[in-house]
Length: 324
Image 1 (spheres, helix red, strand yellow):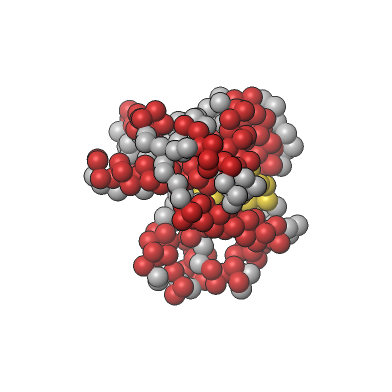
Image 2 (tube, rainbow, N blue to C red):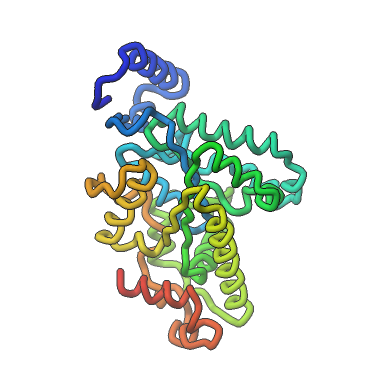
C-alpha cells in the first residue's frame, strides 16, 4: 500500500513491474511471501538512501538484517531466498570465496564497483523502500580498496551509510563456528549460514560446551583486535561517511532491542528516532539467547583468566548475563 499521493504513472509502472517479477520468478503462493509493504512518507523517493551492514560471520547479521527489513522505510536484502521468508541479505558472497582462494587481491575496482552497484539495484528491484541496503562481510572487501580509499570515496560520493554490527562476545562466535562445523558433519551440505529455526534452537539447547585453552583465548583476542581495527577504519571515514556502531548483544533484550532498532531506522531514513517500531523480532531466531556460562566449560575459570578478565568478550558476557 502506498501511503501518499504520488505520480499516477509512477504508481502504475511500479505495480506492473511488481506483477511481472512475481509471475516470472514465483508461483502466486510463493510471491506473496516476499511482498514488503512500501510506504512513502514525504522523506524522499524510493531507493535514494543506501546503507551497508558491515560485519563478519556468526555475528547475528542475518537476524539483524531481518529486524531492519521489517521496519517501515527500510529494506535489507535483495532477491528472495527459496526456502525462507526473507530476502538474500549477503549479495556479494562470492567475495568470501575469492578471499579464501587468494584471488581477491586481483579484483579490479571497476569489477567491484559494478558488483556494489548491482547489489543496490537488486535490493531496489525486489524490495524498493526509502532506505535500501545489504550486509557486507569484512573479508568481502578487497583490502587494496581500503588502502587506496576507493571504497571510502565510493561511499561518500553515493551517500551510502554504514552500520557496523559487532558481536562483542568473540568466545561465543568461536563456539558458534564450532557448532556449524559439527552440523556440517551431521547433516552434510554447506551450512555457511544456519537459518533453520529448529536447528538454531537445537544448538542453543543441546550444543556441547566449548573447551577453552590459551590457544582459543588467543584466537578470541585476535578477533577482538580485528573488530577494533575495523571500527577505527570506519571511524576515520567520518564525517564524510555516516556510520553507526551497534553490538549484537545490545539487541538481545526485547526492551533494549526496540530502542536500538528505532535508533537504526532513524539513522537510515534520516528522520531521527522513530518510536513506532514494527515487531522487532526478526524473521529468524537470534544466534544465542543463553549466557556464556551455558556455552563455555568451566566458565568461572575462563572469566577469571588473566587474559580474559579485562577483554571485550568478558564485558559482553556480563552484559548477556543481565539480559537473559
